[in-house]
Length: 136
Length: 136
Image (cartoon, rainbow over all chains, first blue to last red; front, side, top):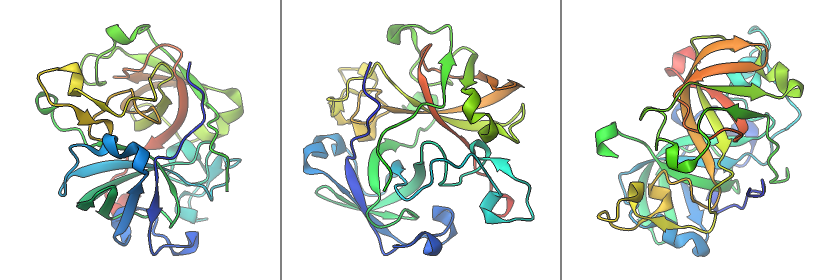
């Protein structure tokens, strides 16, 4: 049984510095940003090329982990909803899930489109977007 | 800054007990299974109903976190590839990402289709599948 301690594999570099400035999702006006992978994890990038669509998992380190229900998108006209039915960053395990396009790979630095994570956010994992069963 | 310690919100109940028996992805022959959410997190389920498609994040607690590159799908005829370009469970932060259909909600127990996680796997989070921007 592995420990349940996360070990960041890198960090986000972005012009977004405040939760108030961040769009709610990457396709709602997020800037291009960089994902900087730790040198120790460089072998895990082998095969990743510009043009790939990848799923980035982050640790939303400014989240409130005690929140279990919210008004969706902060809209008080919408009924309070369990966080498992929303993408609220405030949730028991604040893992961010982001689909981005890789624009360039420069060593262990990835330039990516549409990432709404804040500057300094720890990166936990990258995964390929899965195609059809026969193409995996 | 939050700690980087995960706190499971529930567990998987499944007939899958061994990695050797598990399909590589949920749509490759996974059985129906149950997600059992801890009573303390019940408010986070408010609004979740049968028929919903949800993304389940799990902690693949039988993974090898030291692995950085693999032959994709264990096929030695394929070149060694960084784990960030594969869905290998063996990776620095072994977070499983599963898209499932909710078949039934019975209190804090969710019956779900197409979950390839093993029995006892810790559940970290549930998120809705996002629709178009205007429908969020």
